[in-house]
Image (cartoon, rainbow over all chains, first blue to last red):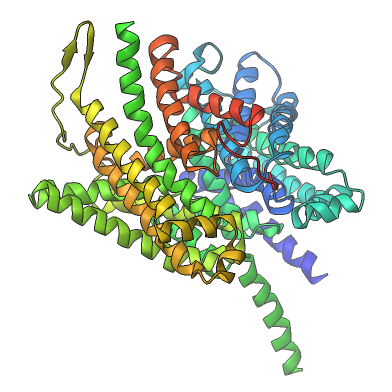
Length: 314
Length: 290
């Protein structure tokens, strides 16, 4: 009961938030919603199923380019958004094939190679992707007379989809799929021994993780109204990794906390790009050395500590 | 034909540099199952050290070279003692993430602490072209090939013939057995990290005049060396060398005969092909786990 009240209050705050935010801050919060969606995907692939993906920016980019290019062909946003996810998901399933054979560092390297190759394709194949200048003039959607063109309206659209993405990830994690992901992530051999097809579920982990990233990309393109290959480099994949590592891998809250810190941190601290990259790199090392569960562990301790204190007073 | 030989010399000179950096990767992997995503930064930092000593402080070449190698060695020692030793029990993924963090920390740290600009480093050898009939090549390439080959041969002899080298091989084969034979495995692992850094530092001095000195050069060199190690074979020192040469030659010829735009992508595609056809690498030996 208290939990539902808590989440209700958070959603209410997010609903009234735009009233108190300037244009730029509104954009940063909107961007955070998009990145959380992608990080949720990576969390399913890496956090739960333990399959390293350092090419989530590729999936993100495929979603964004699908949106940008098909919108220019006059397709409807509402049709393209699922397509963005599906295209990225199919690509993810293909990328999943190497994961059947290799893990950890090999998979890390293969996926880095994939990210570098997709970046080259985006840069070089100008006839399709517009080359280094990318795709511009991307429009925002509308339903009937309700238009999402203004920043505030698009914010609400992103908020709704952001909440849907979180609910979907909770549902997946608690479903048969999620249990299979965790089983494979913990011990593949034991999972197979219990009749879980590691072949199917590894591919599925990549496909589902890529689907979320693709949808994120589909939402990202209209937010910026302009996309170029720079937004989909290997370093962006690294940022997604940093998000879930800082937040907490294999936890629903992980990508949310991580994305808030990685996207908003630099804005709050008003640091130069290089400065916050140093700070995040350092955090990555420190989290690995001292707090492998991520910041979500701190939340857990708070959650345990507070009721205990209230109880003792009674 | 003349053109072909020129490209061959250029490619080998490039490839042998990648190879030296890749050898470090292989040594780390064999003795401690460490995948170091900060390998490129272990080359970048000595490059800047060399610039600081030789160009800024105007210390003559040889003393600054020795000091740079010393600095590299210390860096490798600290890397192992402060980070890797604590992370090893956590498994490969933990090390992958932490070394990615280290690489970012060193890279952007250098950018802020010193300069985001490209620094130039004087050529170690004459670049005045030599003409042999139709073939024109730079003495720098030849010197690089010869000197790095000598370094690799010396390293190979040290590993095969000296007591310490044999201890390293023993640790690579089985940590437990090595320990039972009275080898101090921890010391050997520390030693390998120092050795890796010194090798990277050596490569840095050769690479500085060719690639120039820049804070983000480590990405380029690190990825190349890593790809080289995988293409050649991760569990063999000669695998790293073969891989380095393959990468160097592949990118040189791809740029000359196919298209310059896809030069780097071509190497990545080569990597995928090797992984699909012969995942243990060109001269690697099959391992049970993968």
